[in-house]
Length: 322
Image (cartoon, rainbow, N blue to C red; front, side, top):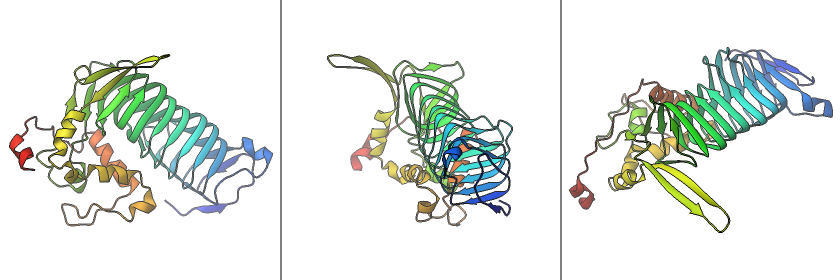
């Protein structure tokens, strides 16, 4: 990021373009509760932010503190650059980013009534009434009280009454849930990465032979459960590969370092400095940052890094020896 000019916040509506805001943007009087913040170019807000509406028009933008908006957090569809939220973000109405050329990185959770994201990396989870994701990576979970619509995404897990999927959908955890049966297009491919050698792939090493992507069948891997008490009866669909994962755990899947890598993604840039994956295939120390972890998962999402398919055979004698 280029050198930024320090600015003092004392206006009702604030426009940032090449500015650094020290101490964040918080209202000091009643008139500032309705303040709109517009970011036109490279800017850094070094603290928490409270605004009636936040608009990012482009540039490399970083929010170092938590962000709350009364109405909306909005990134223009034609924005170019990278927008980073280092801590959690929330809105009473919506968080929206449909920009194909602006990389959105959220290092913690997102909480809003409606969340619509494209080309975004979320290290935490999404909590919303309605979620729409396209070409996104969510390390945590997608938790919607109404609908979740996903196209070409990697997510930790999901749980929503109504779920629709399209394209390549990959899960990082063994199980996901919906109340109604998933609505899938004819081109949908659902898979699970809980036994993929993510640590080896991140290092650039050869994948372990007993690791890989588990291809899922939305009908065959659907376990339907009915939960009931004296007043309410509810049906839950579980899409799971937990049986395969339990067997594989006997073969010491911890060597894949998947849990470490996924946990590291949510630690934040300060804690990441205390952890490492050792050295890569070239003998260099591996740096863990939210940006590099985001690049890694987007390379998997877009096919630049190929995860091998898990071999379906299992050597029982090896389990007995272990």
